[in-house]
Length: 276
Image 1 (tube, one colour):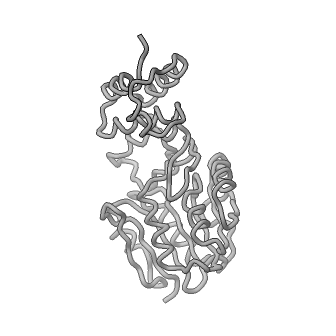
Image 2 (tube, helix red, strand yellow; image 1 turned 90 degrees about the vertical axis):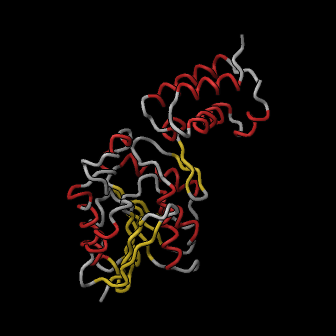
Image 3 (cartoon, one colour; image 1 turned 90 degrees about the horizontal axis):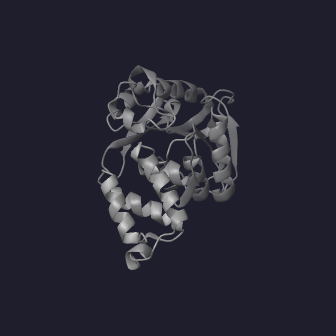
C-alpha cells in the first residue's frame, strides 16, 4: 500500500517530540519534494515514491539524533536570504537580525563607511549589511577556512556591496583607525551553560568562550579601541542575560554605551562609540 503525504506526516510527528515537529516534518517534505509546504496541505493524499521515502527516512534518523534541520537540508533563511550552512558554521538565528537593525539605526543607506564583521561564519551579518548598505566597504573575517568557503559562496549569491573576506582571529592584522564600524556575534556561551548540550552539532569554537562566556568579547573590545576611528561604533551580540556584564566591560574611552533588545524582549546587542 502506497504511503501518502498525510500518512508520512502523521508518522513523522509521532517519531519526533518537540513542539515544532509538525513544521519540521513539513520542511523536510518540502525540501525533498521541491514543493512549498502549502502544496501538501492541499494535496495530502499524493503517494510518495520509494526513493523519496528512503531520503525522508534517512533525514528523520538524523533529526532523532539531534542534528539540526538546517544542516540536513543545507540552508537556513536569514534576513531576506536563504544561506548555505554546514556544521562548519553556526546556524544563523533571528536573534542576530537585531545586530543588523542596530547598525541600520546608526548609519544611513548611502553611507560609504568601512565595516567589518568578526567571526562571520556563514556570512549572515556581513552579507545582510551589504544588501542594506550597498555603498559601504565591508570586510568579513573568520579563523576557520571552511567557514570562509561557505561565506564566500553565500556572498557570491547575495551580496550587493562587494565583501572582502579574510582568515584571521578577530582584529589581528588590521591597521589602527582602519574601520568605522565593527560588528560581531562572537562565542559567548559559558562551558558549563545548561543550554550547550542542545547545540552539540554546531561548531564548539564558535559557541563557547572562557571567563563566563566573556573572554572573546573582552578581546574584541580591547582590539577595537585601536582599530576603530574616532567616533566609530562597536556592536556585539551576546547572551540574553549578559547585557549588564558587557556594558561594564567598556572602559573610559567609550561613550554612548547602550543595549538593544531582540524581538523576544531580551537584551541582545550592546554597542558603544569609540572616544571620550
